Image 1 (spheres, one colour):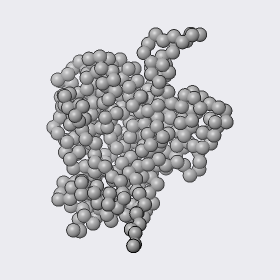
Image 2 (spheres, helix red, strand yellow):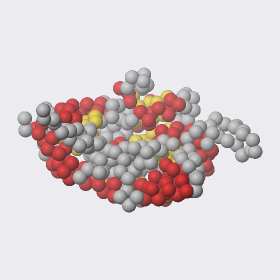
Image 3 (cartoon, rainbow, N blue to C red):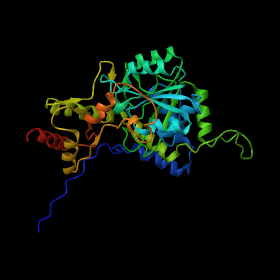
Image 4 (cartoon, rainbow, N blue to C red):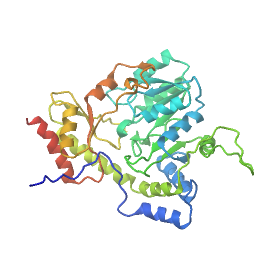
Length: 376
């Protein structure tokens, strides 16, 4: 009996270690010096090198991007009962820490120009909730939000701005790194991000005193005393020296990863962009995206589920665009301001394989599978 050979899996976005083995050099050093705890030369070096890379004065290496978001909220003074504006089109890790702080999220719609927070909806939210304590800005899929408009609005209302740049390391807005416009910026090094430490995150800010405070909180708020003394609530959020070593090596190949993500996006756009009802994620003259995930919206007879199922039959991973937070069972009780644009992006959007290890033949396999849906 003849067996059907399973085609090799094409992933959406999987870890990609450097060909040069940069990561292992730092990891080996951590083992050789026995510094495998959440402190050491790699932790210090990763903080310094990441801060320099993005142009921020200080950084704190943490166990996850979610931990960085949580400490950013604490650093911004967000507490019980405070309202926080949050884009609705995002992953739940943006919104969850608002609840950790017993604060109240208010979800803000997207616009079609950026797929990110709508300045128009943000203005409407301020009219409704002028007492808001902080504003989250997310740079979805590596596309920057319209930061000039958003920052002007937030400055007018004298409110803290936290940038969730988990997906946008290597993305620029008008020549400046995303994650460095607000009071605080966060990056993620989860396994699927453009560079990875397997798990981890970074909090950045030009306020060095607040970053020092975040490090204090992240190490169980242990006071400087001979005995174990704690005057504040603490967290176990510091990054390990081994993980930080992987990050230092990955940082060396960030430009290569961004270039490959751009190559993947441009190829998809060229090969699929003329198909009926296909429109790719927006590009603006002020936006230099890292194109972490190449995404498109479908408005014709071929639907996102058709694309995802066709790809899955070929052992190719894809996923829908994020389901908005105000539609999630846990968050639907909270207020939402907007015109349902995020819902339309969710209903019509699909994220295509954007793995930087893909070869041209892998990309051709994806393209031909999708094109086949239009030939039926």
